[in-house]
Image (cartoon, rainbow, N blue to C red; front, side, top):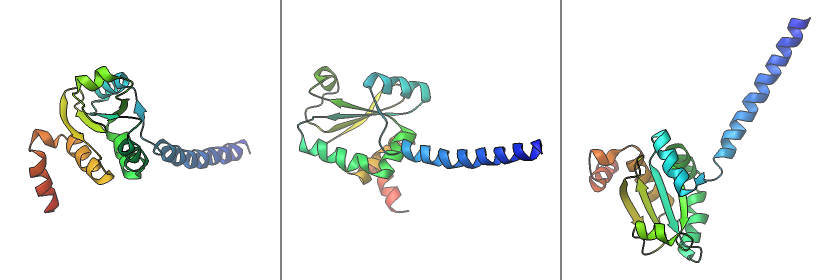
Length: 158
């Protein structure tokens, strides 16, 4: 009798956990996991992840549009959360960091390797498709083998 009761509880626990884990994974991908600049550098180094630094300005309509559209795209959220340590920096709040990266206009995205070395940057509005392309190029370290335009050309011929 006790064995049957235990088996029933075990099955119930498996069913509950199976239902909770996908819900938790879904919840984790509702938004990009932005961390502070320092945390992003630490996470990148600790987990061997490239770093995305999103420079923005709270008064910028383009920045608000990217926040509303690009960073709400499910594919972007999932890709960045799985493959990057991401941080957002308001140029008005941390002007010294903006100067360090020579950010003259927002939005500006900087991609760094896991050690914090600057790889490339993009200034201006970036839609979900372009962000995903560049993110793939960076996270898969394709830049070590070929330049971006060559890779894009080869990719488009597939």
